[in-house]
Image 1 (cartoon, rainbow over the protein chains, first blue to last red):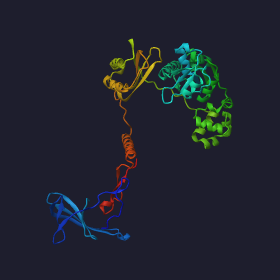
Image 2 (tube, each protein chain N blue to C red):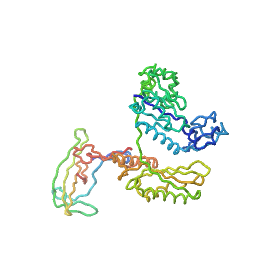
Image 3 (cartoon, rainbow over the protein chains, first blue to last red):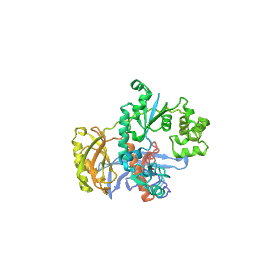
Image 4 (cartoon, rainbow over the protein chains, first blue to last red):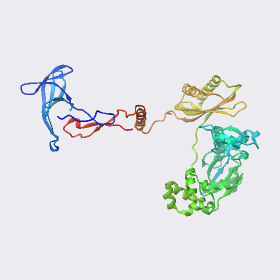
Length: 95
Length: 393
């Protein structure tokens, strides 16, 4: 994913909501998430509930390609993470 | 439909002459007590070379021998209200057009009075003779007012049926409009009402908009605005005499507390709220003292009222020893005296806007306050669905 080249946010600028946040993951042999680093602790993934691909902007030459996973963690919470197919970086995001 | 205009010219001057006969034949000015600098609101006929609206120091330089009186607007208002009350005993439809001017709907009064002459006599009798009331009768309020100006003191004048011809030679300054518009009319060479009538409706409307159209109609004697009878407000007042004239604020506060206790114990105010009040009293050797008591929220108990009074008394100084004290409470409302807003959200937004404007003035940049808005709700990328848009007050 290409980082947005923009000026620092000021009071009068439009701000996006729900921007992705970088996250560290441990992957299994199948390249699926096995644990998520959150608050300095690794939280094991109990179940991958869903997985899907998103491709946007290819028609305008600004392609964004992501592979999303919805994960159920051992502590009972559910989070969504995705891997940017361009940079290979992992992010978490509310859906 | 005939309308009578009852005109009591120079009301404040005549009121002061009635109250202080020693001013008879002497030059004096009545100065506004509101705003800075103080200006002249009226003058006696002997105070030559002075116009209403002139700054007080300028007027005193021009007429140094003139006595200066502080305007006692509350007393003028009370006296005028008494005239209106008397007029209402003669006609049910009496419009208060400001202190000294009233309009009376004459429709149906011929059944009571027989002739216009009888009615005119009755209307003249509604004010003390010293005010020299003038009555003007015409088919509309504006021509009736002009007719009243043409009437002799304690007399009446009926505008002729051809009202436009009656008004034509008169000066445009008689028109009820702003001084700026009158100046512009004169600047265009339109000095008389006849010249405005002759110029045509379209040109007046094109130059002055809606106001121009209204003035053209008035210049032609067409004034169809109805007489709107005044709304009656319940007034409650109570009074006490000081055994010894007092200039002490503590004594005054105690007296006010006593009056307020008495007021709220009375059956008239039981369970009701009051929106405003007024304290007045005669001052030994001086002009009467008047202190308005605006209650920010309607009050329905002596405790609440006194809390407000104490706040309003901060920094108050009496002009001299008070001989007596009258408390007048108005704006008496029902059980639910607090006024709600029809649009409470709008009021909240107005308050927020004001706070944000103040923030910007202090900080030099807008406050970080945003609207949460849907931008592209169907986007497959969650961060593109919504955005924070800066809130501009």
